[in-house]
Image 1 (cartoon, helix red, strand yellow):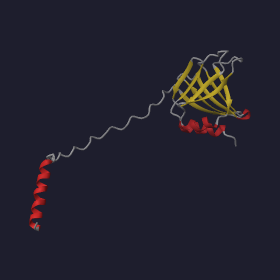
Image 2 (cartoon, helix red, strand yellow; image 1 turned 30 degrees about the vertical axis):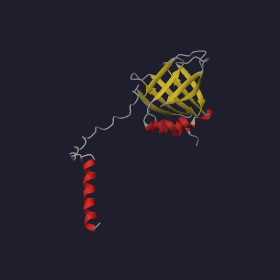
Image 3 (cartoon, rainbow, N blue to C red; image 1 turned 90 degrees about the vertical axis):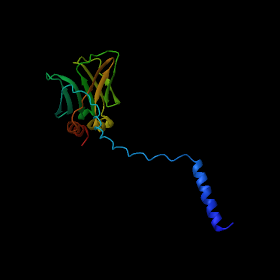
Image 4 (cartoon, rainbow, N blue to C red; image 1 turned 180 degrees about the vertical axis):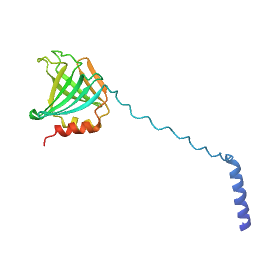
Length: 173
């Protein structure tokens, strides 16, 4: 076979093979640019139940949540001399058979032991100072408290600056 015949045979074979394959699809028009997406909604935050206030004294530091009328609703305190934390929740009522009060920072509960024998306004519970709770508090998105069937929250946390002042007051040194 001469080179001319080899070329012709190759050309014919290419035509036959191309004829057997699927016809080429017409080119698609370019897609229009995507419309700008609205920004993602901010992470849901817990509702404000009032105003947070930092309190500092010789015995320790506290964060106090007051309602719109100025009544104390919730308090988290560090008693430095006793190396313990105290949670007070005014709307709760003592249940003699219930000693567990949970204080939640976002999705993590921290357990405090409720005082069931001493009458106080609401429920008071204590725990050793919890470094993990202190580390999470300045970044918290919501706080909760639960005792028996009672729940307070979710509630908006104190500002990061208020939380840092509280944490600094809780830490030894």
